[in-house]
Structure formats: structure tokens, C-alpha cells
Image (cartoon, rainbow, N blue to C red; front, side, top):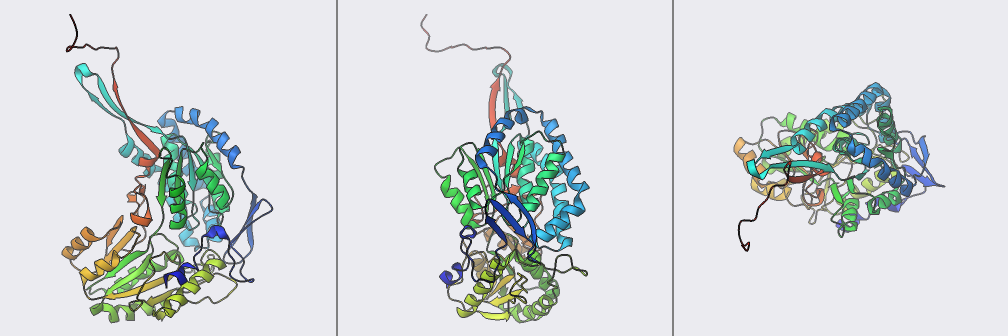
Length: 497
């Protein structure tokens, strides 16, 4: 079972096409990267590959003067970045909607998040990495300050092509690092606009550089000795490969955010309609292309029938359409037709293994990656695959009680996000204490995490370096000092007269 589904989720770097009529989302050919709109299949952007060696060389030369800038200057610069994004907000949102395929209303919320991230990061730097001094009389002064690492490679994802890499870049710049940003090869145009806004803010030359390319360019950045840190958001496969590559190089800081096979547990609640809405928000926002999306709906048997009876009709009502449609859809397409084909194959494999399709996953047009949400009861599947099916597929699993639900929720190698719907404060206390995840919610969706809180997970979800508010922690390292204006010392023991 697991092998059958895993076969449909090969590493993107292989560039596998499942049939002749499927056009891969981006094309790398003749030293040119081409990006297509998922909703229309039309070419949106093209650009030349970057020279990684040259980019690293420029970054290394730019770093000393940027790191030497007073913190107040760096903060002023990133505030100007927010202003540049604000000026181009409508244009930026339209580009995200077209290139990532997310509805325009959602793309606008992403642009807002890019803007808001600046002040959040400034506050986080002060709180997480602020200066500390302790006077110690004759022993001088003890101080704790922070230094930047140097040249940071930021490898961005396609689902939030502006907000998530920006969440690395802004804290890195505040700390005094310079940045080489390689956006996903599926959303290079969005990455380019983000860098344009940064350059227009007046940042010194080469403090932020765009690196255009595919997996090879990403691997080159990871392995380059002139890169001091790698900040990655993406699949577990790619994250584990990065971790393995750098295992023998402990001097290079690595922060990995790798998604999840996230559980949403529903127990006794009188608010069945609200529970259904929370499930839809958790599983199908952004067409299920969120690392915090609910992948597994674990339901207490006593509420199963009533919950499913509310969930299926509500899910059927979700509008799936072009990101620019009016009225606006709830969901746009997934990122490309190859991804849609893989998700279809995964749904079929789950049914073949004994799953019961409560709401079939459908692709109305085989040439376009629009998928209607799929819901499948996999309670009878003997070996449920522990993997992130990155799209609008929700597996339902029935359990007899809260404790068995917690055990099922923890039946994963991932540990990013988990939610409990229903129950008492005591039930939530039991859930919170026993669930292994970095984000744990009660009567709230699994997704929609705040940038003003840490964002990260355990297991295959990350390497214990949470992002968002805690990104300041991996963008600078602490330096402990003892300091005196003049040398003062004596040796009182063991000296000959």
C-alpha cells in the first residue's frame, strides 16, 4: 500500500511526466526557466539560470559592510521593504494568484503577511536576541550579544511563495546576514518581485540576491563552502536530503520546515456544523497545499455519522475555480497537472487498499490541475501510508474514544500541527499533554498559525528550529563576553616567594 502511493510522489527533481498530455508546471531548458499559470496553462514568466558561484562571491563581499551597519539602520531598511511591498500590494497579490493558483482573496492575505512580518521580526529580534549586561564589580561586566552567521541561503516553497521565504529573509537581514534567495522553480516570478521590492527599498547592492534555477542550483547553494546557513521550507524528502548532505558540517546552521501528516481529532460536541466548517478550513484551504493542512480526520465513533452528514454537503458546496473568478472560489487549482495526476493516483491507491470514498476526488479537466476535494474513510486500510499527500485529500479514521484517538493522531513520523474539536477543558489538557506536535489547537483549524508565535514541529516536520517568531534564534548566534576597561588580575595561590 505505502509503496503504491509513494510511487506517485517521487522527488520533484526527477521531473517525471506521467503522460504525454501533462505539461509540467515549470520548464528548465536551454538555460531558461519558464513558469506557467496553473489555471490557464499560459506562460507567465521566463528567466535565465543564475550563476551560483558568482552569486556567493558577491554575497561574501557584501556581508562585512552590511553586518557592520548599526542595528537601527538595518531595521530602518527592512521597514522600507514593507513600504515597497505595500505600494505594490495589488500587483503582488495578482501575481501570486496567477503563479501559485491561489484565489485572489487569499493571495491578498499573503501580501499582508509579508508586510506584517517586518514589525513582528523587529520585535522578535529584540526579545529573542537582545543585548544583556550584568555588572560584577571587580570581575568587570558580563555581556551577551549576538552575531550574524554570514551568507544565508533561503530555499522557498511554492505554496506561500512570498510569505514563507520572507519569514526567513527579514529576520536574517535584521541580524546582519546577507541572503541568497532561491524561490521554488514553480514560482520564480513571485520570488523576483519580492527581491525587486527589497532592492527598491535601498538595501545595499548584493545584500539580497535572487538565485533562479531548479534542484541543481538549490543543491549547489546547500553544498557551497561560502554559504554559512541554509533556511529551507519544503518537502520532507528534500529536507532530509539537505540534512544528510550537511551532517558532517556542524558549523553550517540549518533550519528545516518540512510539513506534516497532521491529525484533526473530533470527539463529543454539540456544534457539529461548526466542526464541519473547521474541518473544511483545515483540510481544503489553499487546495490542501499547506504544510499545516489536516490530512487525517480522526473521529470518535459516536459522532461519526452526524459529522459526516454535515461535512459532505458542506464540502460539495465549495467553489473550485480560476483564482480571478467573480464570485471568488474557495479553492484554486493545485500547482500543476503532474501534481494533480499524483494526487489522483494516491486516492485510487487508497480505495484499492480498502478505503471507502465518501467524496471522490475529481479532476474536471484532465489538462488543467483543478481538483474537487476528496474525502475517504481509511479506517479499514490495514497499513495507512504515513506521508504528506499535499493537496485536497482528507483521510477519515474512526476511533472508539479520546485515548485511542490520541494514539492514532501520534501514529506518524511527522509532528507539525494537531487540533482537537469538541470535549472539555480536561479532554483538551489530556490531548495537549500527549500529542507530539509543534502546534496544538483546540476548536480551531490545524492551519492559520500566527507569525507572532513559533512555527515548527518535530520528527519529519523539522529539526527543532522553529520559524516565525523564533526565526531570530537561528539567524544569529549568541556570544558571551566578560569585559573590563583595564587589565586587572592577581595570582594568590601557588606562587613562590
